[in-house]
Structures are given as C-alpha cells and as structure tokens.
Length: 413
Image 1 (cartoon, rainbow, N blue to C red):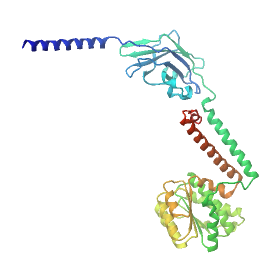
Image 2 (cartoon, helix red, strand yellow):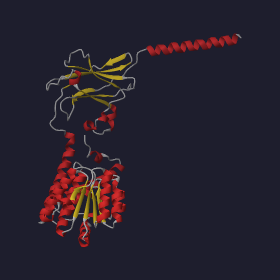
Image 3 (cartoon, rainbow, N blue to C red):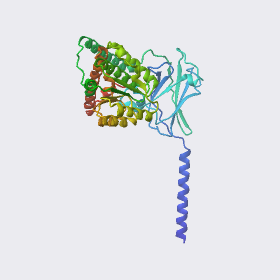
Image 4 (cartoon, one colour):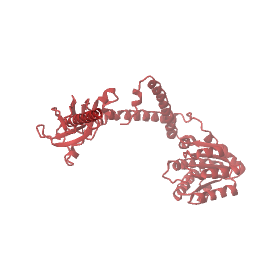
C-alpha cells in the first residue's frame, strides 16, 4: 500500500513539473531572426500607383509569424501607419515572373506591392513624393523591427517592356500577311490547301442546273452578331454569283429578319456582279419561321416538296442539324455543310457529302472568290500556324532536356 501511494505521488509530481515548464516556455518570448535584406523600388511597367518591396526570407517564417510593413512620408517619422500585413510563408518573388523572371532563387525572397494612395485615404501619389518603409516581424507578443529604412517613389511608365515579345510577334505576323497579299496580287493562282467541300460547290451547282431543280441554302439559327453567320453570308454571295452564271434557281431560308435582309442584299449584289439583275427574285430569299423547330419543320417541308438538287447548311446549328441533314439526304440531294458548332459536326459528317470543319468555314470566302486580299491573308495564316507548330515541337524537345526558356517567349504579362 505504501508503494502504491509513493507511485501516485511520483506521477503527480512529474505532471506538476511538466505543466509548469510548459507554461514557462509558452510565456517566454520567441527568438526571431529578422531578414537581412529589405529594399523598395518603383514597380516597373505600371501606371505609377504602386511601389514594390522585397526582402529575404527568415528561418522563422511560419503561418503564425507575420510581416508588417509601415509607411511614412518622413524618413525620420514615427512609422505608425500600417501599409500591409502578410503571413511570413506567403508572397514570394515567384508570383511576379514579369519582374524577376523564373530564377530558382526567387523562392528565397518575399515580394509585395504597396498602393500608397490607398494607404493615405485615396491620395494620389505625387511624382516627386518619396515614401519610406520599415519592416517588422511579429510572432504573438514578440515584435522585432529592422533598422533599415527603404525608400522609393511611384512613377508611371510609357511602355510595358515585358510585352515587347507580343509586339514583335504582331510585327512578324503582320509582315507575313502583307507579303502574301502582295504575292497573291502578282500570282492570282497562288496555291491554297484544297478543301473538298468547296471543290464540290461547282459539281453541286452544275448538277442542279442540269436537273432543273433549285439549290437550297439553309442559314443557321444565330443572328448577324455571330461570326459564323457573317461567314455564311459571305459564302452565300459566292454561291449566288455562280448560280447567276449558271442560270439556276436559288432559294435561301432564314429564321431571323435581319439575316434575311442581309441575305437579300448579298444575293442581289451577286446577280448585279454577274450582269443579270433581272434574274434576281427577292421572293426566293425569305423568312420561314422565327422559332427553332417550326423553322426545321418548314425547311423539311420545302425539301420534301421541291426536292432541291443541292442543299447547303452553312452557319451555327443546334439540335435541328441532324433533322435537316437527314431530311435532305432522304431526297437524294448533294449536301454540303459548314459549321463551327463542334457538337453538331458528327451529324453533318455522317449525313452530308462534304463538311467544312471549324475554320474551313471562315476560309471558304477566300477559297471561292480568289480575291487577293483574302487569299493572301489565308495563306499567311497557314504559314503562321506552321511556324507555331515548329516552335511547339522545338519547345517540347528543349523542355525534355530541361531547357524551358522558349516556353516563356509567348507569355502575356
């Protein structure tokens, strides 16, 4: 029994001593090692509203340790106004590659931007106003302030030097475009990559002329604000010109009154260019319905009754794409579709004879018209894509060997 009492007393004494030591150390001040570097400078490539501050990391950096930056207009001031407070394990130079690049040592330095105007109640920083900063390190009740005072003034910059790469890329691509436009004017038969659907336009229109049946042009469901609709009306103009030359019958169905008005003017202009304004019939460009499925039903009825020899589905389509294409296929017409709606491309590919995929829709106008300005621009785009593909391959190979500098040439800061 005496042994048991002694054991109880020993355990109690140990626990009492342990808690006493714990409380003593909890109340003792934390020993902080302050950063060795601290400086301020005008933030480059800005409009003159911010000042950048950077300082080295400390061995004490942790989530419960804070950095506090004080600001004053007077170098000998009290430095009582707090500009910013951050956790010591955040805000590194790695977050601003536009200033420090991608050096591995950027993780050893902190970086923040200060808006003096916001600190001083919206006061606009003067061009000659110099601001002074002090850095303090805070952990609980312990606070240590560096003796170093960093000073800088905010100035606006005329040019964003880190965007020079974008400027040079723009100049290079513009030069390529201008070169090919000039080349296209000198060489009207300049080579363009063949697009099967566009090569088949003459075949489809010739078949309609021989059979004495109409050609049906079906717009998508988007308005004139859509780039695909603009491309569709441009293609319509080229098709209408050929229709006028072949003396065939063209019908254009619309679901938007503005698109209808534009289409009427485009077709009329094409007939005028062909020298046959008398052959133009405004009633052949008409509005069938303004709602999606009434529009589909009306167009399907036209296909079934008049059995066009060729159907063109050009524009942006939704769920009606398969219904229209299936109905046209059942009538035996040659069908050429073009859309940038990637969700509907599989339906057009399986039900139409030819399909313009994605950007081929935008290239169609240049391809059909052979207008030097359009042809030169289209060829320049292909060359630009080729250059980018080469750079991608080269960048991949270099990155495989740890050389990543080429990956930063096209960054937009």
